[in-house]
Image 1 (cartoon, rainbow, N blue to C red):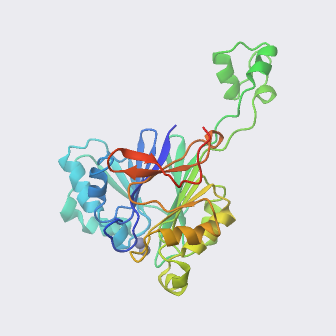
Image 2 (image 1 turned 30 degrees about the horizontal axis):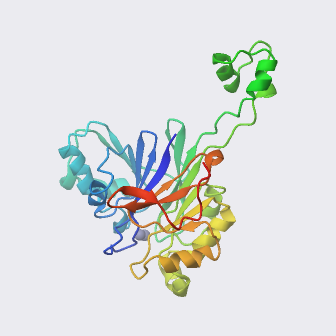
Image 3 (image 1 turned 90 degrees about the horizontal axis):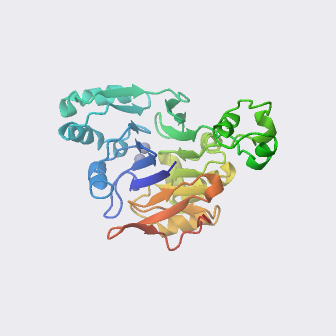
Length: 324
Ligand SMILES: [Zn+2]
Ligand SMILES: [Zn+2]
């Protein structure tokens, strides 16, 4: 199952010439999940991967830089004759706010549901779920963890055959926990393998809530609005510095840290260098870059740079190359 993160906007607070306001598109199989929808997100998507029929939208909090692109996008879906229903989820207060904007986007025929979530109220979608958790920002703000279900353990085919099981459907039965011809699953099937875990913080000061939610995550997308020289300003505004985000990633033992929500005063290199001094497996995606997240046994997450001519190409400076 393919799983990737497309960075549609990597700026914080105000857009710059190179970076749009926050929006992250998670693509997993046929699912298309958007986390935050800053002003201009439609255009960011249209000029790159296309304005895809999103399956769910999750807002981290109600600061304008994180949702102002939503009313226009909801309207565009209507104009494009979208048929699939859409749910927008967010922290308490989101529904009230978006209901006030009904005159802008009306009552779309495709069926729009607005849903306030409580912390830890998981939203299940097939074989994964999205779990909101409270972070530390000004006002109520959520991070989100995308958590895949555990996968069945690996089957020792050679051993199963020696015990008299015929390769084919019976192998599947064993993997699903059934006894076949007197052979019990625990004799031939290894331990269940963890699914992938992606954690997106939204805006937050450094907090243990992220360390817990992101424990051994495949990718932690953490905000790094400031560099450490502006640590006072970060504390005052409920944001993190690159060094602080890197410390959180190290404490959580994640496989890759991706920093986003950069203040327009930084180009990116200084943020990356500061974080890598603490946590080497750090990337600072630019707008339209993608992080591919393979299953753990197939290699590490890898940053793929956007190339406007050819779509995407592997990052020349990516420190984490997949061996597969
Ligand atoms: Zn923000
Ligand atoms: Zn904010």
